[in-house]
Length: 174
Image (cartoon, rainbow, N blue to C red):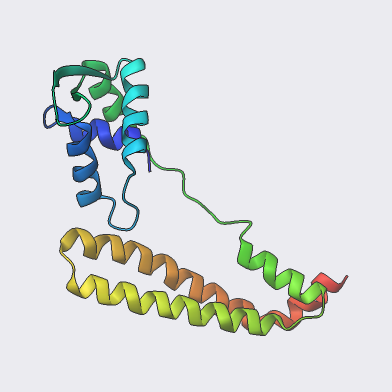
């Protein structure tokens, strides 16, 4: 996820302080990975330097002065371009799990155990996400569905690999 573009998009609804941006980000997108304040302010400094935001006002506070940021026309154009650009699909052609299976076979360890352990971990995570989806709002349900679909695809791969493990062992041994 592009944090800069996300913060710019949040600014389109109106000027905000860094604290307000962090809170909005965490509320909408940071359920599992909230932003650190340092990340917000370093990103805002970069956006300011690049002309994508401007300081809309400075207010005294209990500590340092609070800057209120506003998106510029260049920032709006940048967000529009980012939204219109499709994300590159990640084919996972070199996954850590595949590497572990092949190394297990090469070192004469039990690759089936690796697959079984991974299957159990995937199922555990799917139960957690299913529970979260059941209790969540629509946004949480959609993000959980996205993760669950990826985990289901991984499970299909685990089953296929387990079924072909003997053949893979022959190929790897060559």
